[in-house]
Amino acid sequence: MSTAVQHHPLQLATAYGVCRHITRSAAKNFYYGFLALPRRKRNALSAVYAFMRHADDLSDDPTLPIPVRRQKLSDWLDAYHRVVDGESTDDPVFMALRHTQEKFNIPTELLDKLVRGTAMDLFSNAPEAAEGSPYIAYRTFDELYDYCYHVASVVGLVCIRIFGYREPFAEQLAEEVGVAFQLTNILRDIKEDASLGRIYLPQEDLDHFGIAPQELLSGSTPERLRPLLEMQANRAREFYKAADKLLPLVDEDSQGALWTLVTIYHRLLDRIVERNFDVFSQRVKLSAAEKSGILFKGFLRRLT
Image 1 (cartoon, rainbow, N blue to C red):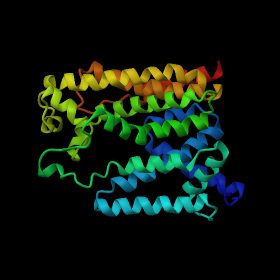
Image 2 (spheres, rainbow, N blue to C red):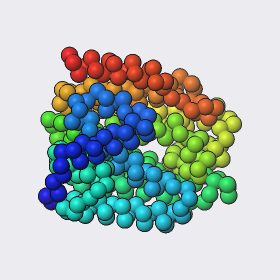
Image 3 (cartoon, rainbow, N blue to C red):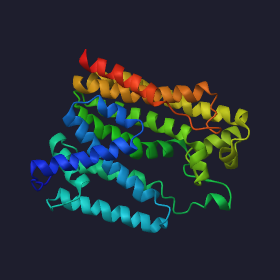
Image 4 (cartoon, rainbow, N blue to C red):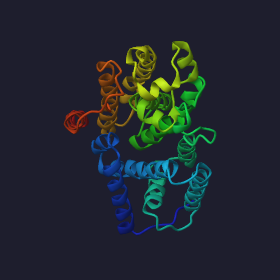
């Protein structure tokens, strides 16, 4: 890793403050896990999240054609690479992330993979939802797993470097937990994603249950969709098992944060199951009070 330009402590403090503000404003679930961390680790994760958030915003900008979004993502990543190579920057997110990279030994390759995952949502051959059926992005679960790896598991691999971990096996476990998180997100957001022309459930699974893409857009026959969605939930549950093995492998001051994140996402999956996979009539979520209660228990785990 190249030597970074040294910034005044006040500049860094301001940069991290910007990242914390972005995280607090946009991270509906992750922010609760961040709060259970010591300040230096909380700052570091906020820098990573702010970087991710900007990549998502570039990718999701509906005012720009897909090729333009791809180019903007590429140009933005190139700009960060120049910062990694020692170029000065006034961008607070770049400034804080570069400092975080050095402090916690985060390979730039992981951040590149994260942005690559964001770009995977830019289906250049996807028809607009209004023109017909939503676009099915992945043919097989193996292909979907690769997507989950890039958009979620990579985040987990960055997180455990900030948490601190003792065994190399922790990396495989973090990868699996990331897949569990993303499968939960996919289940929760099926209707919203389909309305945007995106279906993340594998084609082979829809074929197995005889489900047409339009049915995921309307959700008009939930009893037909339930076996398909239950399959995805069962997959997620299997991947969540990795969290129990990962928890004791991370540093003690970070175990409460990891437990908080896993518990929030696992409970979200439980809520989907409790509602018989009705993710169509309204968005499934946990209340702020529920998440705060989980955070409180996460703090207790950190203190004991």
